[in-house]
Length: 104
Image (tube, rainbow, N blue to C red; front, side, top):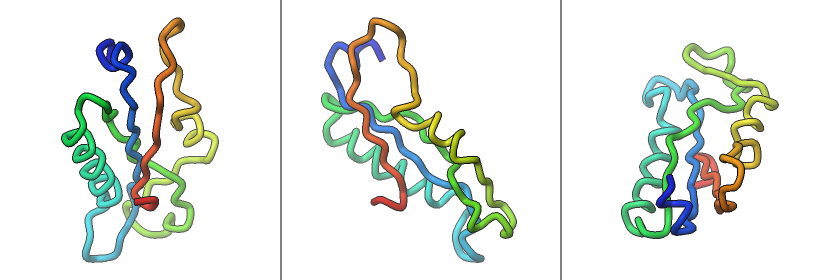
């Protein structure tokens, strides 16, 4: 992280949902696809970006009746967003980009 700060890297925060996708896809497919894309970005331009671990839970009330779906409240999700994440005082401002599976 210190190197990323010093190099003024863009920090990418993958976000996805753990939700029921029908009988043909795993519960974490949204997270998997998003992380895969983000890691590919990081592989292609490693000197410019740092990929954070994903946030794997989202706003899934529309799927809540399906087994395996995990829903978090909007306030909790917002606290995990780039605007809600706190960095150590005195650090330079990092450029943060949230990338979500449904926005790919």
